[in-house]
Amino acid sequence: MPESEPLLLTQFQYELPDDRIARFPLAQRDQSKLLVYRAGAIQHKSFSDLPGLLPEQSFLVFNNTKVIPARLHFTRTTGAVIELFLLNPVSEGDNDELPISQAMERTGSVVWHAMIGNRKRWKSAETLETTLTTPTGNVIVKADWYNQDASTVRLSWEPAELSFAQLIQFAGEIPLPPYLKRDATDADRLTYQTVYSKEEGAVAAPTAGLHFTDAVFAELTARGIGHDYVTLHVGAGTFQPIKSEDVRAHHMHTEEVVYTTENVRHLLAHLDYIIAVGTTSMRALESLYWMGVKLLQSEPDPFRLDQEYAYQWSVTERPAAEAALVAVLKYLTETSRSAVVAHTGIYITPGYQLAICRGIITNFHQPSSTLILLIATLIGDDWRTVYNEALTHDYRFLSYGDSSLLLP
Image 1 (cartoon, helix red, strand yellow):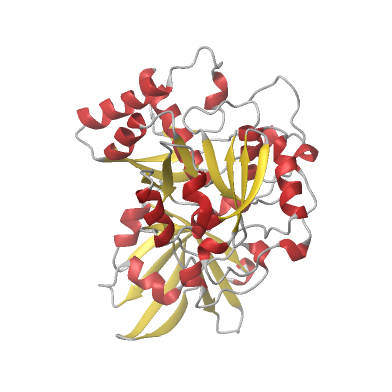
Image 2 (image 1 turned 60 degrees about the vertical axis):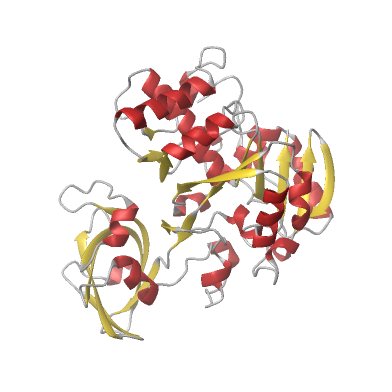
């Protein structure tokens, strides 16, 4: 990580009153407020105004992941409730990651790494079981420890011909962010998804996209503003607060991301005009650049990126964005792949220079979070001015809150 000057946690804190946290969404997605920051100047608009506020030739990149009902509850014979919060699937036998798309297609059983609520009550040899009533009949779901030390659990079900994607819709609950401090409702199954969500596997929504509607997309098209979708399956680590005094000591979580050949071609065609819709899209785009750099350097495992790699390069020495993307496109073409599954632990902090993104559309984030660091990387100390403006003008904060367009 960069060593030029300390990055202290106190530099990324602000006072967020509890009543400014939006616990429920607005009735109409695109009627949220939109704070526009453009080279230091600030305007207050409605999100429905967004298409007319974007720079000409802007190209938006969305994250089309879909939130799965990742919370499962089992009741022991004693009455104790065990909660499983599914994090990521693992391959049986070696405990390596299993691509989420493959896990969703599994029938009969699958193994997941999970956070376990009431863990001490669940005995090592005990099978948890529940029976669900569904429109097509009863479904029996069982949970057993797969590797207790590794917090992996085997889920099995009957009828076995159901896919895991089908099962989870019956068995699970939408995992709302902990800061909402409420139980999920049936309405959240719709409102905590973007209208363009497609690829199942996230345990948190890419919330910057929650404001987009068919009407906003139609206006973007009418103005000639193009867009594309990457898939980054948002993990629970996105809510993990920074606890170390030096923010560089924070351990950044890793998330699965899928890039297609078409993604790379679109990025190359619009390289100077790319705006990320959300912090997860920005993570995905910046990660792709560094994966291209790893390919240029003939490094092993180029599609796995840790949080340190980007900081090994000076800005003057690192390859151009075009060269990195061309390397990725060459790899996909030579290996006859239409897509690649990658894993990124990129940690974007002040001192990092963005390679792909020229701006971002994003919500207002928690104090002392890695997401605040990302915003500070983009607009410097002005992040504090932006957040003060939002607080002063009664903006709603966090997942179901209002939005911002940040153009440095």
